[in-house]
Figure (tube, rainbow, N blue to C red):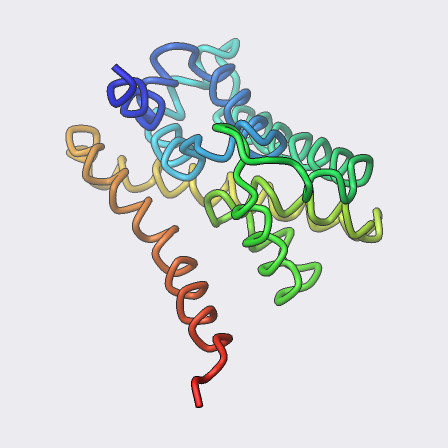
Length: 214
């Protein structure tokens, strides 16, 4: 039953079928602003949402397709603001917190390492990296990153992330209509493309940082 639940939660189509645009907005907000959102399928969900972009626009008062993109971008912006606020208010407390099903300290340390290596631009880059994007705004709050810079990079990052993923899905589905029938394969490829580089980076970086045995 748990395995079935995980498969359901990781299936982007399920969110669209269950709640359409409003569900997507909630998922993007949760993944970018709440601890419990780190496992949600942000990239693949946005790509699939792009495939159904015209349908989502029609459901929202027959609005132009740019409207759903802007609303989802706004959800990502607000999510990061919540993460920043939480990090600023909680500070060292979150590093002392014990692991739970919804909170893994290793993800926090990974995000901190990524932030320290890439600086303020991490707020933009992290948008495209699963799990990291959930914890980076929290780290920015913990270290009390300049708020004006955070606002700027937060807005730019969310717009770039949502626009690129959704427009990729929208344009590719128009060019290759068969994509709708191969969504499972597409989702797996997106997950591999977005997660493999960062996994390799941390693995290689970790090995380089290990002390040499004499």
